[in-house]
Image 1: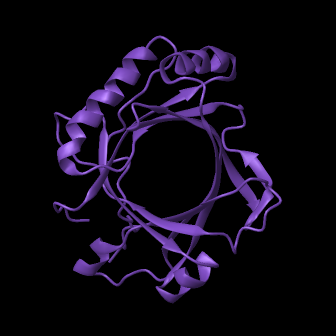
Image 2: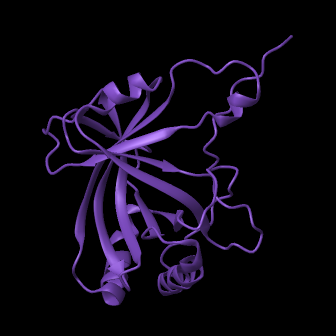
Length: 222
């Protein structure tokens, strides 16, 4: 994904919270953000090329894509919701970055997203769901606290099961999508949140290689 003056970026840090620390963390978040929050309920689908790109330079262009929709009840039918395709680019590899900074692209899609995916040569790879809530700090930073689930039966939200089996929470402190010239300011805002939550959770920078969006195909023996 190339960078241009019109590109949008997401800045973020992540942490994992055990169940016993949940109430203390939420109290701290309310102290800095106020009591207003929105519920987080996302069904997210990760798709990848259905056919391996032949050996050559074009293979380096293969990337995973994601689509998601929000839901209120797990019993909702998922295929015909208002879905949104989005692509999370490879994070910047600059050594002076203390938070994750990566380009993002969003595009709405109507109807069943898998029909569109099939047309462009993609297939379903993984389904996830996130359930929790989001608080806002300075109108630029989202503090999202949620549980992450896998889905037992395709597009059936009644078959969710916890990813780690430990009933733990994910804490994601991220910016709204911003232009490149705004990254420095939202970085400071995220670092403020990190400081406020210090001692309750370790919010960490994830190496850009771990978040690499390109598909790595198995090596082929000759």
